[in-house]
Image (cartoon, rainbow, N blue to C red; front, side, top):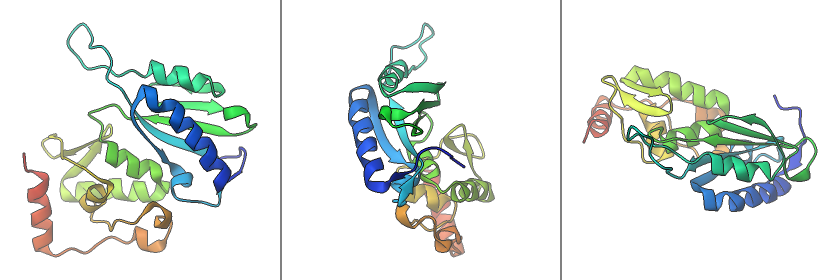
Length: 201
């Protein structure tokens, strides 16, 4: 549990908006996640999911992503207390003592929408969905969604990710409710249709 600064929702939105605007030139896309996306009245940290822009390929033809440009922008906001390729953490962000800002890096082929749902939270809801996926021969590995053969399963929205776990989709501000944690009970026909859709080329 965070013990940092507590911001009112409206103040946290202002900081998140400034951060998102600063990131626009160096990311392919970004989205505010965490308790702020869930519209909590008080926010203890600001979390943003970011997908870096493609970088120059490596010597072996592999794909790279420009995380360094994201880090350069983040350094203008405060001290980088975590400086990884998957998580960047800034302390006392934007001159606000105790405010922690976190950037979660999504590197393709990791699935943007799966990580968007998980990072939006709450954490227990994400864990529930991930543990349910194998019940339907679907797995989350290193941010990718794959079938039993390791083939990527297309997930084009948060709604699709929740559907794979047989969970009802709720908008972010309702994901802390008991109803959001209640699994669906689909008919056998619906299960078969969903499996067929997930294995389409």
